[in-house]
Length: 215
Image (cartoon, rainbow, N blue to C red; front, side, top):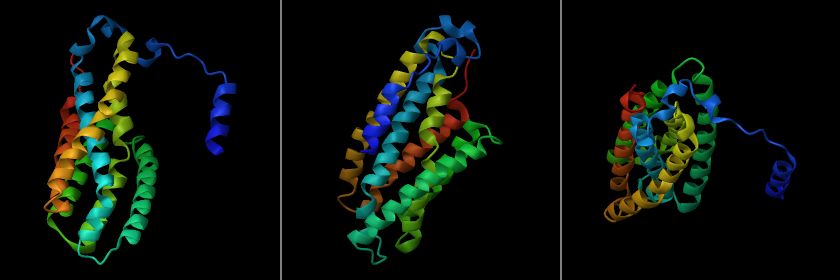
């Protein structure tokens, strides 16, 4: 009912058309072919791996918790997953506030590095420590999708709409990479979290160097 109400409000609300020129800081780059924008190509790659990590972390969450040796059953694992989603929401608000003081790419890199360390704990530790580490990953991954998107479409000029489409399409990583995690989890679910670890390395690289716009 709420969804239908929101949909109705959107249908009744006149939204202004945003001109692409208002989204760029250097319109001179408009003549540059889309695939020549290295930061855009890098953002598509980073978004692919980020969404893969996000989906994979959540998909095997319950299995991991029940195998962590902390005495967690399926019902309790589901409850912990709901708390993790709240941490994700809190992380989005906290990250937005921090970006007023910290450059988005730097915050993206720092959050990715933290998640790499948390993934290491998830893979090689047991008990409640590893479960808590898995839950905290949700907090620090919360800002990654919109940050990668914003950095990727920056200064694309008339390519902005097409570039946005490609970045959105890269969420296919969320369908492909978890399949690899599923295969790795046959021995132990903990082993599967090596995949998100690698994914966060890619995102950290994007926040470090991949986001830069080459003139």
